[in-house]
Every structure is written in C-alpha cells, then in structure tokens.
Image (cartoon, rainbow, N blue to C red; front, side, top):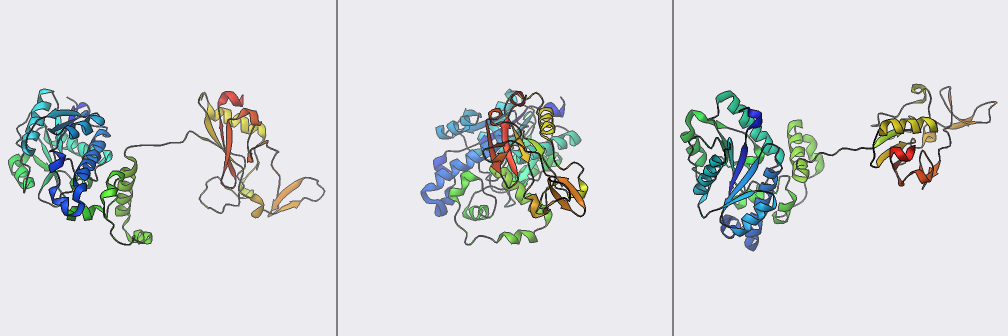
Length: 379
C-alpha cells in the first residue's frame, strides 16, 4: 500500500476522571478532575484536527470520558482496564479494523496541536518508508524516562509497557525496530505540580488557562528581542497553534488603489510612491469600475473592495495653483499633477459608484474605505 494512503488511527487510553491526576491535588484541589477533563479535551481536539488521522479510538470505562470523546467524533471502546491493558485492547480493535498504523497518545498532552500531530505522523511515515513497516516510533516525555506516544503497525508484535521507566522498556523491547521521534508538543505531559508550573511559562491553550496559577509579574516583551530567531519562531508557532489550530484564513477583498500617492508614515505599504514614480497619479471612475469588474470575476457572493485613496497626500506634497491654470494641482520637485476626479461619496468614505449600488461602506484608516458589493451590482 502506498504510504500516502495508510489507514492511520489514534488510540487514547483514559482512566476515570475521578481518579486522574492525583499528584496535582496540592495545586488544584477540587479542580483536579476538571483539569483532567480539560487536558483530555485539549488532546482530543488536537487529534481530531489532524489531516493524517482516519479516526480516533478512546478506550475507557468512564461514561463522562466517553461523552467527551464522542463530541469530537471519536469512537469509544468502553472497557474496564488498566493503562497497558487498554492500549492492548485498542491495538487489537484496530488490527481487526484493518488499520495500518496505530498511534497511542496519552490523554494529558497539554501543548499538543493538530500541526504537531501531523508533523509527528509524517516523521513516522518517512521512517517507515526508509526502514520498513515494522518500525516502532517512540516519543519520550519531557521529563526523560516516560513514553508519551507510540506509533506502530498493529499487525506487528508490540507489548505496551507504560509506567515508570517506560521509554527504556519500549526501546529494549523494540530493539533495532525502535526509532525515537522528536516533538516538543507531544513530549509535554502534565503529571505533577512541577509540570503545571512549567506549563505556566508556555503558550497555554485557552481551555487550560483557568487552571494555571499566576507566576508573578509579566515578562517584559522586549526580552523577546534577545531570543534566537529559531526559538522566537517556535514560540510564536506554538502560540498561533494553541489559539487557532490548523485554521487558515484568507481575504476575498479586492484592492483598488485610486492613487499611489500617500504621505507614507507607516513605511510598510508597497503601493505608496513618490510623484516622480507615478505616471497617471489617479484612476478615473471608469478605470476603477473596469478594474473592479475584472477582479471580481464571476463572484456571486458579496466581496469587499478595499478602496485606497491615499492618506493625507497634501501633508507630504503641498497643494499649489499652477501658473496660468485654474485647476488645483499638486506640485513637488517640478512635478505637477491634477487633483483626483470627484468620486461619489457614501457614508463618509470615498467609493466608486452611487450609494444604491452597495450594501454598505465602512471607512477604515485615514485613507481607505471598505465597500461590500458584487459584480452584478457594479454592472
């Protein structure tokens, strides 16, 4: 079977929430059970957002855990079993379903994200491609001795050995088949108060923030300037993934620069030019409508038109009256240009058609207006 079409499932063994995270009781008290539930939700949310997983199987005897799992579309195998027995049951179930890869994840991976899951799975698939399908992928916990994730072909021999010193035990059992995989997010589990304190210094997912104790004054944001670029990018990536997961956004707006002239105080806009750099400084109304229709194409749904009319041009290019002309002009360094055409106005923003042609226009910034319209309305 092509590696691109592997049937990959995750197994998540979860014991009863009422008995989970006992070592966190000194810090969380009665909220310990709620924190265990939030950790489970965070882990399942990351797994359900993965692009590589075909499904998630949660092995538990707890009805509350089962309900939480079904909310994200996971399947549930309700069995009373300890951690290693639950993993073995999950492996057997996936073997019967014809899965090619079983990824066993613990339920307390506070920093896990869909992207981190996919990167980890991709690393394992690449290792399979290079070394064969009997490879056993292992992710060491951040403390160093435990195992947070195991990736294995469920048709191959594998005996779960989770518990104290499990990473060494899994490595020994796997022998030459074992491969350690790196993944900071998957390596971070929360078992004790020290882990909870370490979590407070990370980009904490929203659902876990109510459980994180205050750690004193906020760190000065300028201290980030001293971080190496790779660490800064990694921290920003974790913060982005914690808040938005795999969500990608884009804008369907059409940008219409009525002019390239601008006082350019922001200095990052690629459209702003000096008078000597522009030929025709302003678009005519006909040019604006034609450009909008071309860029809108066959859009039926309303699309935003970002109409840029320059930000206080006269602050940079003083207005004068050219000798012998009655037109008001803009002059700088010997360059003379006519003022823009009279674009129709609507609700305080400069727009490109009469008010009846648009649903609404909302001015933003000093030199732009956002107009919502469709190609049919422009026609």
